[in-house]
Image (tube, rainbow, N blue to C red; front, side, top):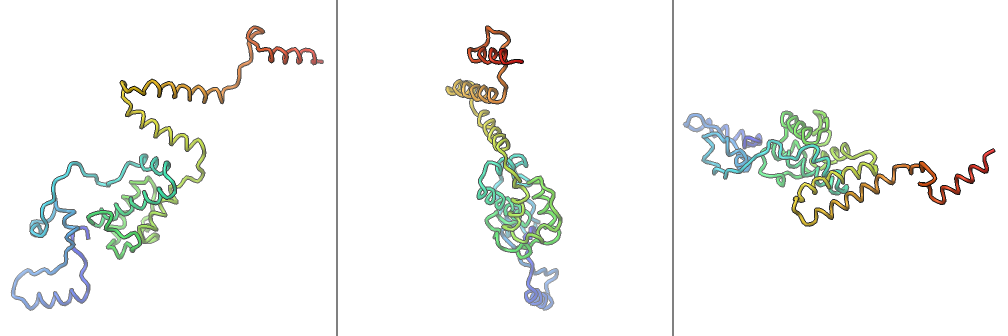
Length: 240
């Protein structure tokens, strides 16, 4: 599939075989092609087939996996709603299937159509598993596409594996701090709002520290408040 050659139905194959046997031309190779897959591989299409596919315009950089890094993906999933996570992972699966099969885009992959029907075989199934494992950081079984035979089913499997078992307040806060850190990198040294941001950050840090640090006991009567002095007197006179 990725090379642009598509499987021939048995009836078509037999008919073409009969036609090849009846002709006097040498080296006849009847086959069907997927033009979209050939266009996706235009850089390394065999010379014999280049007449079928116009050269594609050169692009800048290409990515072997076409996905974000694992930490970036996890952060994106952590920030999103459940619907967002389903969408992100379905797009990831469809994109990787399109890459493995040589489709022009992820949009060409029907999320409810079986992988075997789309053209995946045992070798491309392993490649898809490896690409998804690299993109998500998960350890995935070799039987992945047979256990979850459609893009939507596979995306749901990934979502379940990546879903935090318990979303604690601290985990949410850390995810938001990572997002804030990324935003602050874009604030220039001469930005008019930088000073206000600094004041707000210091105020947040001060409030955070005061909420968890115990109140220190006064070192002397001079440092004690009126309430603390009355409390010390009560303790002194009620002591047996």
